[in-house]
Image 1 (cartoon, rainbow, N blue to C red):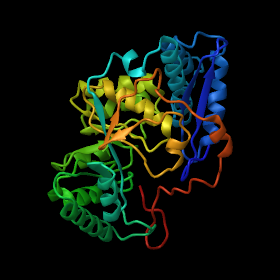
Image 2 (image 1 turned 45 degrees about the horizontal axis):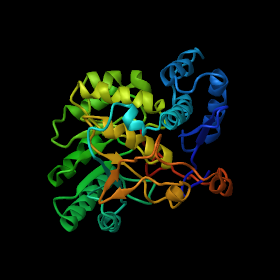
Image 3 (image 1 turned 180 degrees about the vertical axis):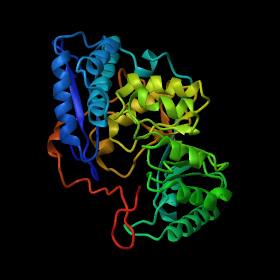
Length: 365
């Protein structure tokens, strides 16, 4: 369905005993590919016990020979989350109880703000943390020096107006080459940010190491475009980041993101899931974060009006924290009549992830 600003991919798993579970594998601009992947994986699971979550996960991952990738990772996530939801309903337990129980009684969240006005709105909504972009809003062509100067002025204004107690994060969307990313971080060091996200593209860990060796005191975060535990192995073991950000909707669901969090824990790296997704990815992330000792903060996108409207029992945010659900499974369900009213819209997501030089040539490396 399209939920306002982007489409969401939902998956419903049903049993012959009338129990169902919902999952999400939202992948912007690749929704139809994920839907096809879900159908392919479902053919391996039909007739199996849905509560054998780990075995079903291994079948999805291993039995097709070809492994990994964001499309199949998202398809697996949708099914895996649905199996956890269904199993929780079978045993009448919230998912976090089945994961070993909560280690915290609430989960800190942050939202998004493009500018100072958005930051003030986030604070007025009760959030004490928000993330903003590292690039000039509304422009696709830049001079590098303009990017650095504009970022300094934006964060300076936010910090002066909002005070020292609001956590500010920057998402660089992997758009910079290493020396530019270093200059960006230099420009905002004085403002005490919570983290600087995706300073460089995720493809080259040596480029990430170049940023790391610059010796900034600002924490580095990355990981939304890494998939499955195998994609996180080197960046974690080389300690090239301070905060790891796997996305539950892309990296194999609840089962796999929980394993990734444990890999980060042994390297003393914080866990802050990437989650600009729909309601079920948010609910699933919440359950995992409740159980993870090295959890830092959970992203949530509150600018999509159908986020709550499609849920029968929306997860609750109070004073910038998610409250832990008490109902079984995910703790929420979806209204299928609302989904039917909001069909997939291929024009819904117009996000452009790259930028151009003044001569209109592609500039992101």
